[in-house]
Length: 492
Image 1 (cartoon, rainbow, N blue to C red):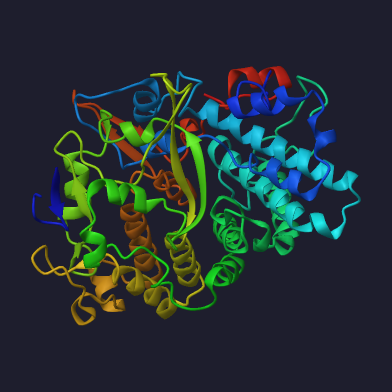
Image 2 (image 1 turned 45 degrees about the horizontal axis):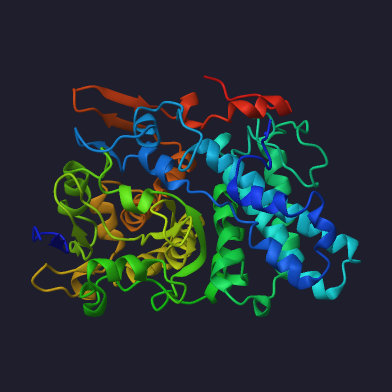
């Protein structure tokens, strides 16, 4: 049932390759399949598996302040453990361990592709595939580094343990690896990213939204440099995605009559469609998130809904999202499940969701934050106003955005955030807008670790759980089996 139009109307052991179904299929073909990857087209087919086939959203979303305790509902370990700031006691779908293994499986595919390219003489026909392989390898390592190691800080990165950066093809079942440092991992990510990005050629792709196109690679670079706090570079790459211009026609028109008239199933499908211009990189992963996130016990509560949607925001208007469900099931439809049966007449199978890894909205926010940190306040406000023009409405009865009323100005920012610091007010606004935009997508957690903020969770029995800025539980635990490869676990 739709209950809210807009805001007010209650309308490694086996670390690298073992245990992942996609990897098992890859390994089952031949013990030395890479010798058969002997053409650019075959390298391209292999690179379809160079993206982590796993979902990080269930644990990152639940670790963040986007989750509360409903008091009842589904609560598997992948939902209850993150909410209680515990190591997830599950190694299967939707767990950190599963994502770890899927990421290294993706890295292995990229490394096999790169080895095949080298064996072919590194000729021009392979150049776009080499570019994709390098950027995909960089992305998987980047995600691992920000989930299983400390976020990048220039003054400490050389002394903090990172994650293994794997650049060679596995020759043994159990290899030995070291975690290196966060600084080393970031150096390798940047090396792969900068070498690979210029080689990418969108013309080789039949389904470009499922590969690192130029736009998606620049989007990744804008995120990478934002994490590294190199704001000039973050700005350069954000501008390179669509050119140095407004993103208004590229982001979702949430407050438009056409968008608001879509029904629930239509919204589910539309959000992750490949022809949606807002989507820059998509991946299909096995997950039950799409069917379960609204009914999980630890998730989007009435209190969080009130805090985000019923309280004032800096524009003075209301968010134009349609929120569905009732008290225990509030949600914004974003994921349509694709269920793959084991056989034609089988009742069992594997559920899949399409997950947006990079979007035009994120790039807009990256550019706004980079501009804010560089002192380009007018440019940052221009992006925020462009974003607000696609999200804010006057009221549920008058779903229009009025620039003269809702436009963001310096005075409105300073007054709303009760500060004299324009830069801090802009950052607060960006983070507030991002929180709304990426609800149920797990991105909030990455802003929490990047800005080193704490999280509080309250339980239905009255306890308050605190995850402070220096709490070791902010790092997801490396799978126990990785110890067989010489990798030290995170401290607890």
